[in-house]
Image 1: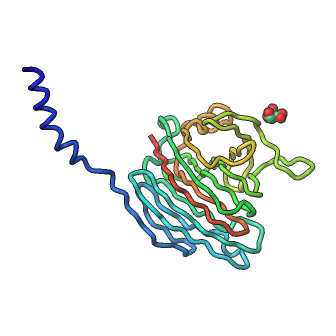
Image 2 (image 1 turned 60 degrees about the vertical axis):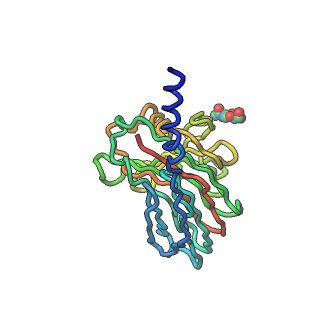
Image 3 (image 1 turned 45 degrees about the horizontal axis):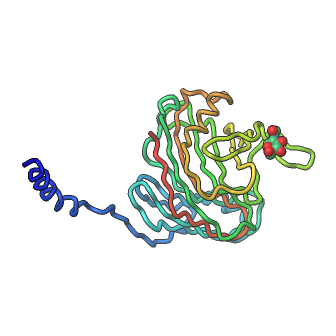
Length: 254
Ligand SMILES: *[C@@H]1O[C@H](CO)[C@@H](O)[C@H](O)[C@H]1NC(C)=O
């Protein structure tokens, strides 16, 4: 009897299991190239943000959302900049959900970023870029960067050695499965903390970004009452030509 009852329950369930919807993958192909172009993709906005464009003698920067699958986005950017000394563009995906929590209220920020770049003979970084403020949605006080690649660029630093190299404030920090040097300085408006890989690049990041924030609140004096106002990830491009292809990106603020 029991066996028969179980079997009939199973038989009833089978059509529903079979009919379970497969996740919807949205494919896109539109290319955005304008200085301040934006487009939404899942819980993020793609920002072209070519804020240093006027410093280039020539160049261009375009980006495309390739697929959106729930919280996971694939996107790419192709850029080429000549001339000037500073960053020309920060093409990035910025989170639209979960922002403006106080750091003390954030439980976790799981992030996945799998990427590759066509050329390393450029001046650029590949980095997460977060900002905190004393008020919800307020102006930035602290900038927190996690660099996954330093292609002949360098972090903001208040200390340089005699060879002109930035000197880390803390060396060989193990966080999120990788080892980092932590640099500190000011961009003129904000305190800037930058975690850089001690060697090589991190082409497949899969860790809790909150570990980095917690390190800074515990050891570097960032107040836990600060609000996380911005959580972006992309490439700060200064010169050269490259395509940065992100096959999977997700960042969720819990
Ligand atoms: C960091 O680690 C490297 C490699 O193990 C070592 O050579 C270096 O001395 C360390 N730096 C500091 C400041 O501990």
